Image (cartoon, rainbow, N blue to C red; front, top):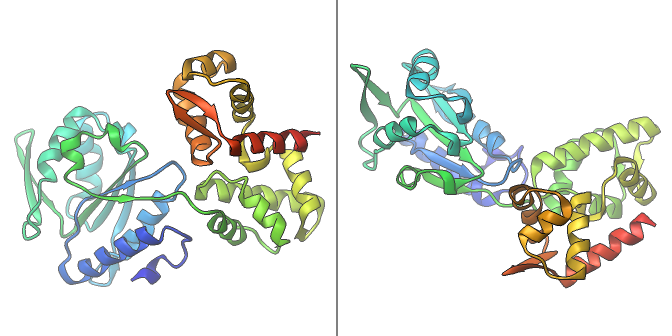
Amino acid sequence: MKDAFSSLIGQESVKNRLSFYIEAFQKTHRMPAMLFSGQKGIGKTEFAKTFSNSLKIGGAKKEFIEINCSTIKDLRYFFDQIYYPRIRGKNVSLLLDEAHCLPQDVTAAFLTIFNTENIKIYKKDFDFDGNRITFDFSRLNVIFATTETNKIFPALKDRFVQVDFEPYSSEELAKIVLKNVCKIRFSKSALDNLSKTIRSNARNAMMRANEIQLYCAAKRIRSFGDKHFKDFLNRLGILPLGLTSSEFQILKILSEKEASLGQISASTGISRAALQRDHEMFLLQRGLVEIDGKRKITYKGREALEEIKNFKK
């Protein structure tokens, strides 16, 4: 069943775990509610689609439905706009993305609906608006997905099998680029350096592949080497290691002295929330900064700073 994911690169532990549940489903037609967790662009939706396509009933694939939870206004909206017209009586695999955005009344209802610890119990009744609604989990399987598991109500999160996605390695990102470009040959060093500019997720790798395709088409070239790599970065304003101009600015600030999040925010004009969400996590993942009360630049961060300064000359 691991072959079901042969078109997808990386995430071996995720593939192994989902393959187990596919095999179990073929024998039992039972599937627990799942929670896919990981950073944006890591591939949660693509894995959910591929996983769902493997859950066949009578040889037929389930219908795959994707809903962003930020669009669910309340419990009535969930039943009137999603459950009744799209789920009831059908073989469906439902992806509820951005699960941390579920409204409180929907969360409260799901606590009851997904309270199915006993695998022998595959139906759950729920009373709503004077009607008894039966959820048949031999026909319906649900995948929740989020970047922020800490914002999901703990008791609800305990109802799910959690599947954690990991950042991609440089080698895996290079493979994603190669898979998404057409008729372009790379030198090994150019491809290695290019993969280091990608921010550890599949979506960014696909975007970089599209940019390479456009660059090569504009240049009318079929080979991409070291000289093209530097020109490519300059033309698109990409810094070595995939750093943004804001992250370069943060490293410059920390190269002079340690600083608190508030001090960095005041110096850059970037909000504390945006610093933590969009920049700090990436710098920490790359080992360029560390936090010990205040933010500090690491030796690796100083090396990156010098590399960028030399690149800008």
